[in-house]
Image 1 (tube, helix red, strand yellow):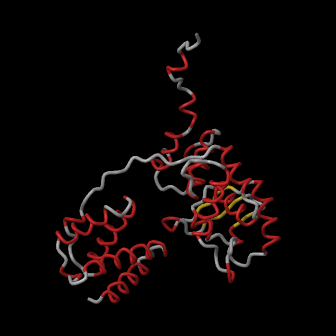
Image 2: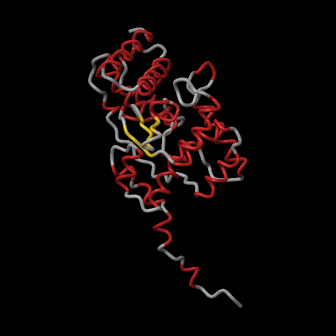
Image 3: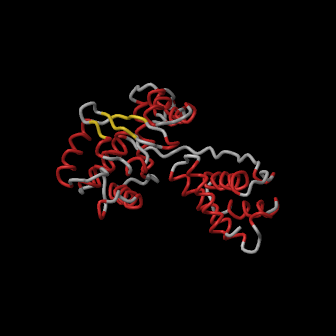
Length: 280
């Protein structure tokens, strides 16, 4: 099977099975990289040792999440495209990385937003933080998704192709109305050139510059705004199950991560250093 044919069949089957456009793009990209790496080997005749060698090489380059995506794409290749049993080399359990996400304080969020003078740029960052949105969800927002009367943002086909609702901040209402009056967006709330939706790389660049300008030395990305939203809600007494719904998490365990980084728990504990008398 030629590489172009393999990718075409994979994309077609993924589309029929109602996978999201992002997942289709991710799977086909992973399969293209694998097919390019094979060079002389036929896709239909790949062995366990070949796949193990590929995963070994990619582990040095990829994050855990990307490696998981690669394994999922290769499993799909076997079961749905070339109709073979899944090789043992793909039936593996990857050990989880216990990473704690970076969270900005409310004061740090204020400092970042104050450094952004461009109205569109500031409104984008305010939208992400105030509603706990993923970057892709923000860029896919359309004008009809913003319910100003009910103070709700409707997220259509978010991660996992799920619809959900989240809160529309009073401050954001004011900022959003100034923004729409000035920029007159057509379809998408945030548009770039030729009325196309704004690019993800542009938003990441806006955040990067704002963090640097504000003098914050944490490794804060656009997604840090979402982490901060959830943590601040928890610290302000919002029920964790409500936060789960706002974030669109399938499992409560995912949301419970924020209980480990909330300052509520740390405020209850005093360091033994604070009990020492260090005065002369």
